[in-house]
Length: 210
Image (tube, rainbow, N blue to C red; front, side):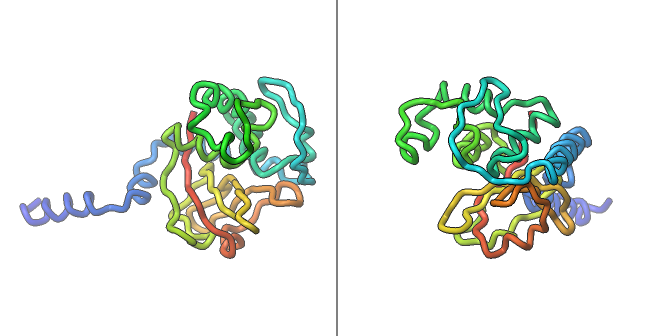
């Protein structure tokens, strides 16, 4: 390789976008983990048929409401348990117990301490937890359309602000070409193309592994 071509190759590597580089260099194990999370999320379609944001007292750890219902956060919580045996209820509760002030619970809901019944079922808490686990790939530009995520891969986690600024979360089930998302926005778990979110506001893109 000539000096010029060597410098060119190095320059191309340095100039590679962060997302592109991350996707291209992803280890097979990471990709397999993502596929498992995506498959576990997809398996909820047809099972979770309702949306119910009611506060419920549930067991701890591994507590859940009936799988026939739930909120958007439950899609991720259930998928992580099914795919990886990772209990976000316990993980979020333990992290909040260590660093409660890092979470928005006091500001957003007036809470004075962790609540294992509900903390893991709130998108704002999941966003904080994922960021604290170094899972954040990128924050979307202000007022970016809800389909403006770069190369989402199966198992990636996306968040939005939907009607009235309501936080929302979903799991990427297919991508990066023609990406699809499993989420529950009001009628149970559904798998839908990412472009259907374009009228909402993109917030953040995560790739979490345990």
